[in-house]
Length: 404
Ligand code: CTP
Image (tube, rainbow, N blue to C red; front, side, top):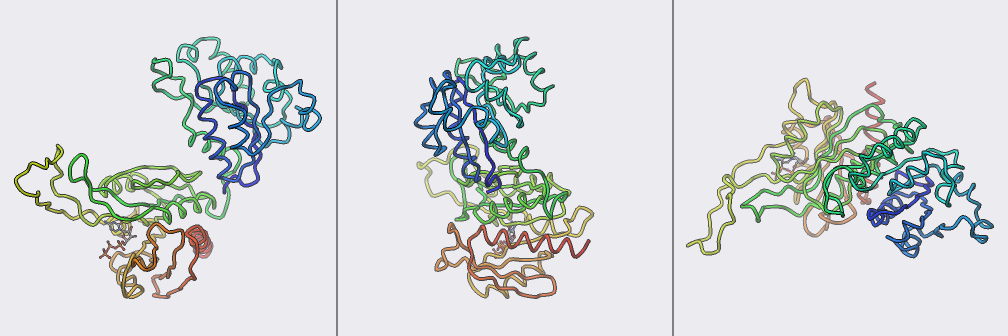
């Protein structure tokens, strides 16, 4: 909950991208932000006040001349009680009015009256975006300190292609987070790589070999590292989880892709390999879908996958200072983990019991044992995966304090 208690005034202006603002509200609230919304006349043509209010769990402000709204919360307070004003989508029209200091409705009045930072996420047709008038308006706004996120390139609702699409919601949340949460914390200035989730090893273009990993523990560790100030790269196999706030996401499918992404992210001081990497891949994945009409089931010849943890932990000038592995075991948990730590040359290894009776795969809790180079074993009580992540990252912070 990296935005816990942060207050955001979201101004939704007219544009087809306004539907994405509903998801933006949801994602900001998931991170603990308090989101109050102003819906312009144009915005209300695309999303209803009811849906905005239901998602923000706040009253929606629309009319500058509303006596009741003014009595409850004047437009000056509306803009000053926020930590940040975000205009998403920002239409060409609202950008022009902002650049010219107009106060022709509640949104532009709040923007003119504010003493807080402002961020805009433009969304419009490519020709409107490229028009000299819009570009001049954006230059003016930037020169006054307004942060601009996007637009990005892509297909438009009007069947044209080019720059003008509103940035993806995750990128807007990321930009808001960077704006509101200064990079500080015990791990500030250190880079971390985390692997998470399963890998998918192709059999043919539609079939693959996978495992039951949900990615919850790896994602929680990446989020905790970012919260504690680390510049965090999360290399994740396919999962259904939302991208954690404040991390650089690299999405991969196979073990080979995961290794390449990790090597690209080096150098780093911390590497935490949580991914349940498939040990084998199909040696010769078929280029076309294997047909049922084959005379016999196809034999799948397997080839060994690279051991990412072992490669990262190998002594070299790029070896991270702290390499942490996980040991998913179903029997002799601690003994197997100790052997794995030695064998893979990691600094720490986290042993966890993944036998079906524990329900660890996919659940929100984990029971782990932390084993270090000296062989010391610390057994932690069953905790949520978020709590395990927080405690582990706090141990990492102390580790770096001690070796400083
Ligand atoms: N790991 C990895 N690359 C692989 C296999 C495993 O990076 N190809 C990492 C995992 O992310 C984990 C650690 O190695 O941090 C141990 O993974 P685990 O599945 O417990 O063990 P394996 O090495 O696969 O050995 P085994 O299957 O024999 O238990």
